[in-house]
Image (cartoon, rainbow, N blue to C red; front, side, top):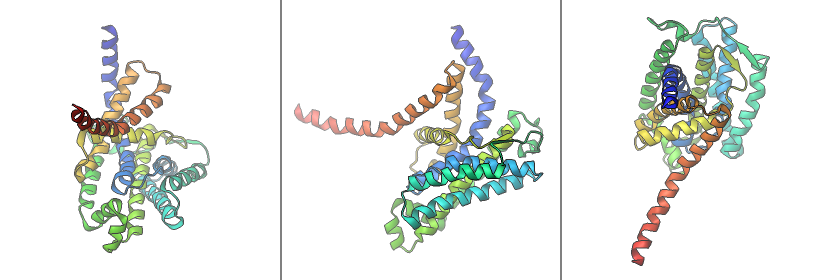
Length: 307
């Protein structure tokens, strides 16, 4: 009984912090979802674009730039990183995963070049979270309000875009590129633009995380892909993915639920090194469930036929 009370008390105290973190990381989950779901383009660029956005934002803030300009620069570099992956795949016919690995690997050196060191502190610099009215700067409430508002804006814009002609073209390329090209859709433009957009969202998440935690690190993206996939699976299980707005909402809902589950595991005393193992097993289970359900359904008629 004491264990449950202690765990619950610790979990409740962590909710504001993890909620702010999950709203920020929801953008990188969206950056993972767009290639996987909208374009059928398995991609690993997000694990490199996330720290790229953080490093660019950190250097810009350290140089005295406005936090909004720092975020804009992060978005631009993330977009270029995503476009590079798509271009390598299309131009040289390299598999999407390998193209993503190549870009992700090269980005590590680029991030080191950008910062000139492995980590950079921006404590004391003004952030977008400091502009939230009626909230004390540096506290989770300010981060929740700012990140939550930005989440609503991004969701509305994405929902609008993917229902336009160009957004529909991107979805058509992901569904059937051969048929899309036969209908006059520029497959190259749709693919490069879509993957670039995903890279921009991953970089946005990295930039916001740097402004939230006060420092940039070249290794800050380590493991973000598997965490993002786990969050996406949870979000799709809760919200569904039958409609565009559901698919767009899933990353943000999944990020909130996933990081609350992580917080609960930590509050219950799970060692932090075991979280990666638990996350990997969870993603494996979520991916295997459809196959297991299909096997059971296929076995059902056979059993009834024998009877």
